[in-house]
Image (cartoon, rainbow, N blue to C red; front, side, top):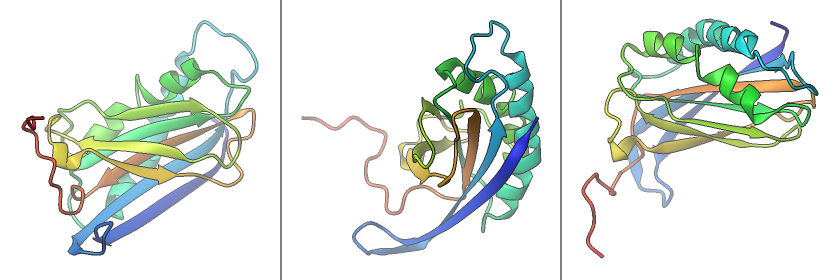
Length: 181
């Protein structure tokens, strides 16, 4: 695995979108910029990307969880592939093996890890979805953290992203019960 750089982003939310104070919510994203070994070509066997995802999860998740102010309750993952990449490269990097180290580090993980993948140029943002690690239908924890790296991904690179949060959205009011029209 050829890592060009890693980036850790920590944000602390202290008020909702209209300025109403809330208990602090910490979100941390860990991103790695790596070379895409399959850039520009079709390859049937993408298993080397499975292994890369697992290695990155082991390498970065502990540091991300350590940066939280409280215990992790939500998680998510995403990948941006440079324009010489393919959507299947994204799935290969974040699905088969990345989840295990994420679940292990957050101390649970009964729920599927929300994910997002796209092919794009350097500097593009990606919406990294978050969901409760153990309660898949916890609407209060359906959230998004938008992240980007200014000089990545280059055409032959991958930005692998993982995120954890120690809280739900500030002042969640949607609930999990259907609302009558």
